[in-house]
Image (cartoon, rainbow, N blue to C red; front, side, top):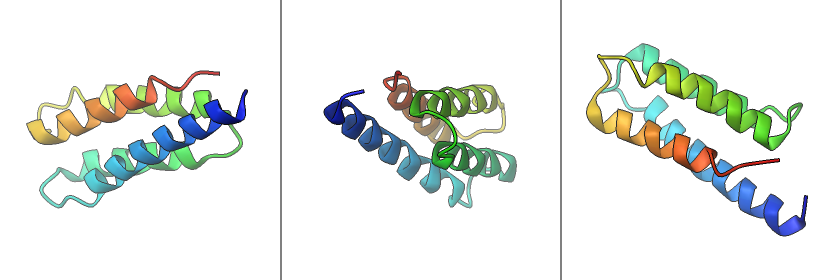
Length: 91
């Protein structure tokens, strides 16, 4: 993978993690959703996997929780934003 691509992917990863951390620290969001946002952030930090694998695992987790009916709409929108950012990361 080219150096430029890797830098672009790391920038996307950092952007996604910033949003996830904001969700995880938002006390108006239900606890299970905050916990899942933290788990997704931890997955993105797991250096034992490739960038694309980390992104795919986080997307899977976020996609599952985004169906939660107790989730505030603004939180769902943030999570969809994270998913769309992560979908741009490929091997």
